[in-house]
Length: 352
Image (cartoon, rainbow, N blue to C red; front, side, top):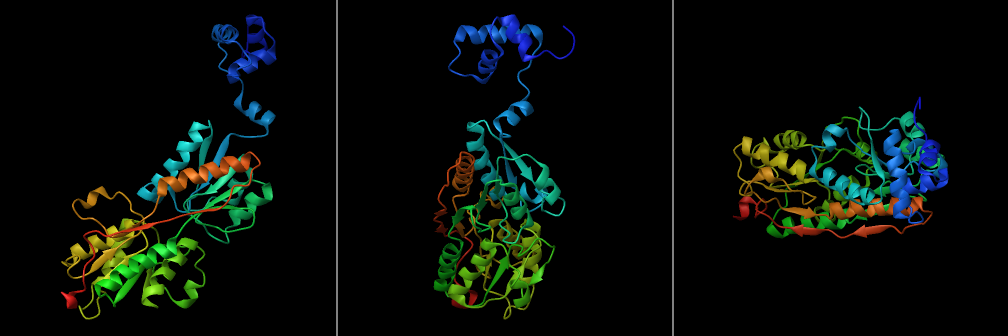
C-alpha cells in the first residue's frame, strides 16, 4: 500500500464492513471480542492508528473538548493553589468521561474574542473569573456554546456553581469583632483585571464586576460597616506583601489591628509583610484569609480563614457542563463554607 492506510483497508483485511471496523475502534459492545481483535490486528499490520478524531467529531457534531476560561494569566493561576485544586476537580470528572479540557487565557488575563469564536468547544466553564460584563460570555452564547459559571457571571441560561462568599466572610468578620477588633482593613482581589492597585474609592467600587470580590467586601461591611479596602493588581503572594507593607508600615495608633484578605494567598503575603516589619502575628496584628488553601510553606503557622470546598466545586462545574452538552438543564448550586480559626487571629493589642 502507498499513502496513509484507511479504515476501509483495515476492514477489508479483517474481513468485516467499514462500519463494523469503526465500531470495533470505538469499543462498542455490539462487536465481539474476536472480531475486535481481528480488526486491531489488521490495523497494526497496516500501521493504521485509528479513525481521524477531527472527522469523528464533525460526524458527532461535538469536539469532545470543554473550555475553561481562566481569569488571570496562567502564570498567576498556576501559582494559586485554589485555582489548581479547582481545575483538578474539573479534569477529574472530564477525564473519566473521555473529555478534554482546554484552558482559555491571554497575555492580559483574558482570552481574545477571536480565540473564543474560532475554537471548537462543546461547553465552557468560567473557572477562575466571573466578570459580569465579560464579552467572552456574549461571544460564547452567540455561538450557542453552553456555559457554566463558577461564582459568576450570573446570566440567563448560564448554570451557576456558587459558594456563600458573603456569609462566610461575615462569619470571619464576626470572629474578629468578637475578639475586640474595631480598627480593621481589607485587602481585595482585583475588582477588574486592569492592573489597578491601591485604595478603593466609590468610583472604583462601582466597577467591581467580580461577584466573589464584591460579596467578600460586603461580608466585612455587614459586621464592621465601611472599612478601608486596598485592591491588589492580581491574586498573588507578592501582591499581598505589597499591600501588607502599605497598610502596616504606619504608626501603631493608625495601624489596623486586623487585616482581612480576600484569599489565603494574599493573606500569606500580609504575613510576610508583618514579619519584614518586625510585627508579631497575632500580637500586633491579626491576619485572616479566605479559601482554606494548603499553604505548606507557612510551616506551623495556621491561617485563620474561611474554608471552601474547592475541588467539589470543580467537580460540580464539570458535571454541569456535561449535563448541558447532553441537552439537560442542571440546577444552580450553592455550596456552604466554614470558618477555621488558626494561629493568626487573637485579641487586638489594647485588649491583651
